[in-house]
Length: 314
Image (cartoon, rainbow, N blue to C red; front, side, top):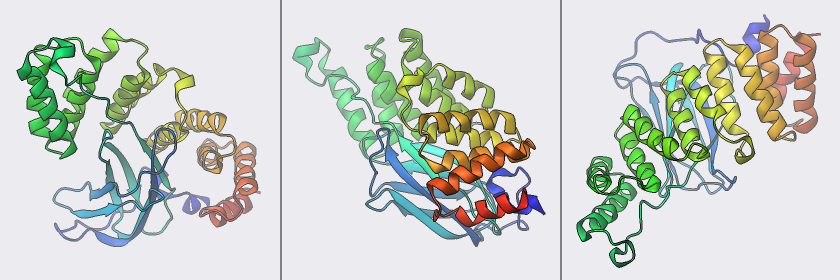
């Protein structure tokens, strides 16, 4: 009975409908979230693309509101990818499992700003005019989401500028936009080879590896990020959810705990850690987390569910 109360996003065996046709992606499931910058400012009017991962299945495109929030009711059960794009920021992506019978946790996600690729004034850099023009063209193409054009321009520039980390960041974004995560990671690793303590590069590598399902590689990269540079608990929460989806509640508990330590007044960390501890049969610890969630957010979107969990674990 208790298992019915755990959000299906955190259960590996999600409820799936029969094979869907190319247009049949609608159902009774719901996804919602909030998109912010790394310092917590909402990203308004950003693109949110929902796609059902099943072959040939479709989805829908949304925009965030002025508070950075978005939501959609009417999704089929199954594994969905959620992609985020905002001008001037590196795109992001998460994979979640939607149930048509249980509410999903809110997806809190933040985007990194795009670093300037390189100085654009040739006299101050001594660079050939064609290289400066290539960088300018690449930046413009990125803003227009023309990732192939951006990649070609930045590759041309990087053949001459071989040690500019900002250019590597921009080139990695172009690769990622084209769907070539492997090349994006390879390019960012050039940054970390030159700057081993570059937390931004390690964080992006971690995100990309986790998205590809490489949990060990993603975790190893995340451990390279200086802890004092991580300000957003959603970074740890999202990693914890990935581990829960892979049926690794011990690892999930660790990362949800990091989220709690980083933001002890954020109720979401307690909710998620409580779910992990419940799977680990740490009943008393789970109850303590659920009680803390209700103390901090008694009228929150998951409050009724958490009360049910408390009642069920007496």
